[in-house]
Amino acid sequence: MAREIIAAGFKYLRYGVIDNDGIFIGSTTTAPPAGTTTNGGMARLAGARTLPIQIAEPVVEAADGDDETLVTFEFDPAGLPNGVFEMAVRNNIFEALIQGTRIHTLSGDAEVSVIDPADRDSQTMCLLGSRRAKSWQSGEKGAKKWENFYIPNCTMKPLGISPQQRTYTPYNYSIALSKSDMLGWTSVNISEHGTTAVSAAYIDSDNPLHLHRATGDGATTTFDVDFPPVSGAKAHVFVDNVKQAVTTNYTLSGVQFTFLVAPDDGAVLDVLYEVDEADIS
Amino acid sequence: MPNYIQDIMARLVAMEKESLETVAATNNQTPDAVAFWPYEQESFPYFTNRLGAMSNLQPGYSTEVQDYRHTILIRLVVDHWKAGFEGDKSDIAYQYLVAFEDYFRQHPMLTTDAGAYTSSPDYLFDEMILTGHTGLIIFQNAGINAMQYGIEFTLALPYLRDSEN
Image (cartoon, rainbow over all chains, first blue to last red; front, top):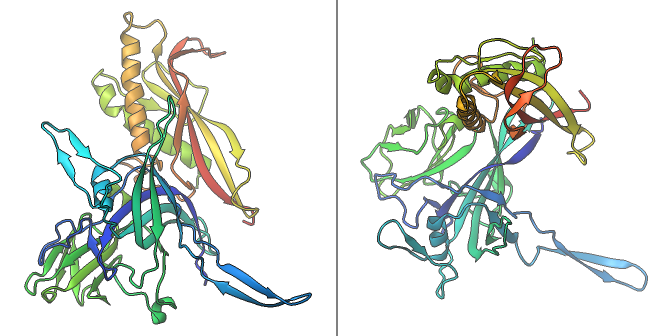
C-alpha cells in the first residue's frame, strides 16, 4: 500500500557536520572522542523561515530535423538545488562553523563574530528538518505523522542582512546542495534506495527525528544521546554502516543505549531516533 | 463521542483553567471556564468560549484536500467593571493576560500538562495561532445584568478535510 502524507508548516531544523566520506560526525568539526558522545548530537537551528532545497529540473536538449524533433537528450541540471536560506535568528556558533571562523570573546559577554572572511573554509554540513504532517492514505487518513527531510551534503555561507527602517529583515545564507553516497548513518545503495547518490531524502515518522554520533573504543558499552528516544524500536542504530537490532545488539533505557558487545575501537555509531515533541528542547 | 468542534471546546476549557491556575492562586482566586457563550457567573476570573468565523483558504492544497481555519473567541472575564479599588483589577487583568499568552504559546497543539488532554488531537493540522485580542474592554452584554470587564482573544485553528470522505 502506498504511503501518502500531507505536511504542514516547517517546525524544527537541525544541523550537523559531515566528514570527507559523508559520514555524520556531530555538531562540531571533530567527531566525539572514542568512548564518548560529546557534541555527538545534531544542533538545533532556531528561526528557520525558508529553506530553498527544491530539486532543479533536468535540462532537455532536442536535436531537430527539417520538420520534426529527431532525438532529445536529458542532462542533470548544471547546478544542484541552491538559493537563499532565510533565518529569523542569528546563531554565531553556526555562522562560525560554516565559515571556518572563530568567535572572539571580549571582556564581559560581548562577542565578535565575523562574516565574509578572506580565507573562508567551506564546511560540508547535513540538515535534518521536521514538519507536522497527516497520513493521507486509506485506512489511516488524518492520523498524526511527521515528515522529516534530510539533506546529506550541503555548504552554506552568510549573506548578511539588508537593514531597513521599521521593517523586519531576515539573516540570509546561500545554500548549495551536493549529491552524496552517504545518508550520514548509512550508505546510499542500489538494494535499499535504488540509487547510489542523492541530494535529499524524506523520512516519515510518528515523531520528530534526531541524529546522534558516537565513536567506539573497544571497551565502552554505554552511550547517551541528547533526548530520550520514544522506544528502542524507534531508534535506528548503525555501527560502521550496519543496522543493529534492539535487544539482540543493544538495549535502551532513558537516554542510554547499552550494547551487549562493546563496539570496536574507532567504530562509527550513528543513532537516528524519534523523540517525543514534549522532550525536545 | 464529541465531534471535533466539541472536542476543541472541551480542550480549551481545560487549557484555560490550567493557564491561570498558578497566577490566580496568588490573588486567592480559582479560574473557571465554560465551553459556551453567553454566560455569566459571580466568581472570577472565568472564560467563555464560542465558535467564530471559519474560512476556507484559497487556493487550498488541492480539490481533494480542503484547508480550513476555524476561529474561536475566548472571553476572559476579570471582574465587574467597577469592582475593587481603582487600578487593582487592571493589574490583575495584566497578570492573567500574560499567563494566558504564555500558556497558549507553549501549548500550540491544544494539549494540557495534566488531565485528559495531554496528547494532541488528530484533527488539528498545524499549531494554533493566537491571532489577537481586544485589549482590556468592558463587555456590553445585552440580557446580562452586569457590566463586565476583561479581554477577548481570537484563536485560529488550522485543519484539513478530505472532500471524498
